[in-house]
Amino acid sequence: MAVGVSERGSLRSGLGEWVLQRLTAVYILFFTIAAVIRLTFWPVTNYQEWLMLSTGLFYRVTTLILIFSLLLHAWLGLKSVLLDYVHPWRLRFVMLMLFAFALIGTGVWALLVIGLQ
Image (cartoon, rainbow, N blue to C red; front, side, top):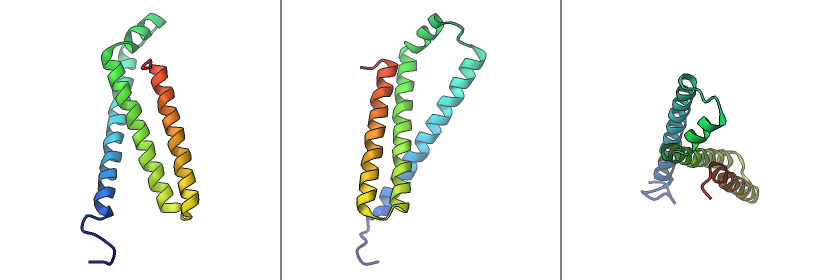
């Protein structure tokens, strides 16, 4: 075994992040396909119909899962790119913190938009 590498090294962590990245991508894809089909075959033509659609429990739950999936997908992707390509650790730390605050702010804004105060 290599020096400084434990049996439960970063391979397990990387595999978990890879699986999460793929799962969030699949959910985002299915949500997008379902939304396109729904809005293509049963279009929303006025504000009242949109209000009825967007206040339903199913819509709110699936949209909430979409928001968390998008944020997690973005975080994992940005973190992987920064860890691979930004080598000065101070710059990498600052950039990770900026992205984290931006994603948290985006998540709070998205929750306010869908009405989950």
